[in-house]
Amino acid sequence: MKRYDITKPIGLATPCKEIEATCGMAHVYKRCGLRPKHFIIPLDAGSGRTTLVEYMTDKYKKAGVLSFTSGLDDYIEISFDGTLQQLKQAFAEIDAAAVYTNEYRNIVSMDISGISSHLGETQLTEFLKNCKRVCAYACVIFFVHTTPSRNEEKLLEKLCETVDNIKRLAVEPYTKDDICALIVKTVGEHGIEIKHETVFHAVLSDMVSEFGIASVKEAISTAGMLVHFADFSGFTPSVDENSLKSMITSWHNDAERSEVK
Image (cartoon, rainbow, N blue to C red):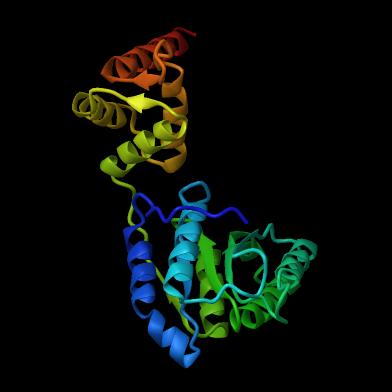
């Protein structure tokens, strides 16, 4: 599996703090053979789930919270669609990932929202039975929507009754500064240099407020659009406050054309 530098996610302060606190107790897990807590995290898909899982994996590995010796993959990501066939297949994939041990003992990320539509069906029984089994060895993060539905809340109640050593975490909304930082980070990942940083950040902050950019998806999309307004004439492509202003003007023109139609 590809390895990542340990870069702290932007935002997600509470989950990151919990991960770091667990790493601070790594000696307890090593000496006593205890398992770290499983987490329930309300966070929509596309809002930093994988980034958080990567951070948790790298931090736990460096601190020695887990040994990561049961398989080739340090973590596995599963998203349940609610069907029984896919549910069984997903847990079979987790079992198959245990290459060097009888059970997979690394980190498992599960999007469990799809199970919440089948609370009175066989899927729920199978899900809870398998979760109890997997959680006895692996460290599991259960993801649900940022604002869980009533059925998701009922599912979480059943899950907490079934699985020991589980903790539900809060996730604070991304702030305007978080969104700006995400845009800057994504622009940099495209190999684009930011010039006149102070002025650039001031214009960017105003733009985020004006257009109500509030989610990770929107931040990433905005950064992708900004790349098209970069100056590619130099050795390193760059953007500055004028690039932002050109993009803002383009957005205003698009909005005016939409209103005319």
